[in-house]
Length: 191
Image 1 (cartoon, helix red, strand yellow):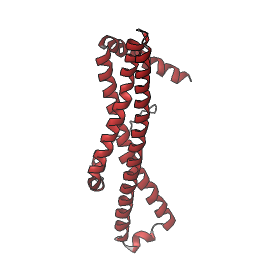
Image 2 (tube, one colour):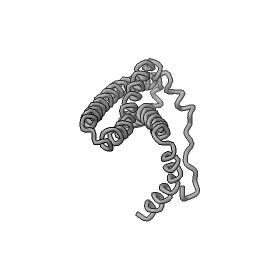
Image 3 (spheres, helix red, strand yellow):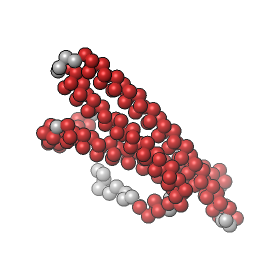
């Protein structure tokens, strides 16, 4: 940061408190992760299909191969969208159930507090804070986690796919990454 302060460090101990809320949904989380993995694999099939289209159909001027590969590309794209929608639907349902459990546990805890505690807060402020804090916890614990895992899987898959398709071109692209980042940082500051 520009003022010399450090960015806050993640408190991993706080994530341990979420374990009781995640345990009942372990199986469902694994299913959502598996569906996300299938979606990622379908997305990673596109570069290989593009390679096939260029090498097998366009360069050889094979109209039959072009139609066949184009049909496969369309099918894979539609299947990818369908699987992605399924993963999102399952994840939102799972996330809502976890949010309900967190709110119910918080409400049970609030019922054990003394009247003196409630005398020091306005009820509207307490309810508003409870709703916003639980929503923030749910968003960070579940939405961010799935996003990080999905993006990490996609990144690893992209690297593997690039190495498999053409390792020399992969090395050229890796060498150009620092220059691309420097250019991005330069124009970001200017803009």
